[in-house]
Image (cartoon, helix red, strand yellow):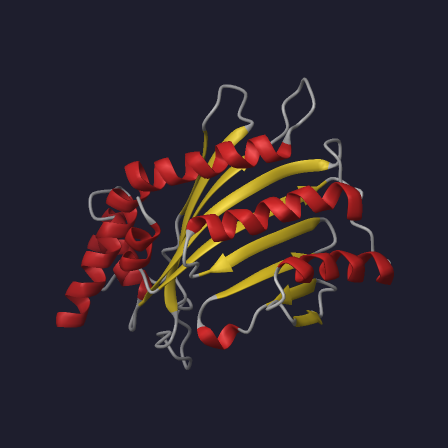
Length: 253
């Protein structure tokens, strides 16, 4: 599938990568600033630098245009992503730059990598009950849906997430999650999230193998191909299309 195909199916599309480390990342001022300065040298429009309350550092472009890059440093995780990229290679090139820099600027080598994640995510604008949409779209013929046959029953907590191994050693895994932004109803509180979106995320995670040096760039390339293939073969027809159709039906009623 092309990027246009992904973007046409949702309201916002995300391409993310995360490197999860065994050890805490360097926390010195000079190291952090030097790393982000190197990122900014390649992408000068990334000019918004700040620290969140969780001690997470972030460099990003202006979000107001709806399309922007970001890179983050957490205690034991490095993140890189592009929101609504014009081309998949735009996101991949940024991710590869981060992977090339971290051994030299953050002292992250193959021994320190716990896992590598490559994710595609989609947001679907949806007013009303997200749980009802998810239940109807994804649970119609499942055992879980039988609970909705109970008198006065209605879905108020449907946010499924599954993880499957894609290799015999379980080192390659896929995670698919669909998140409702509608809070579980409590008396006296608003029931629906009118301005929120249903979020779908599909991640390919790779753990280093038991033998040999983990080649993070080679693994990244393979994970990108795998996430694209499985999005086209499994996620789009079985998760995305039912959500789109159900949201459209709800809008007509």
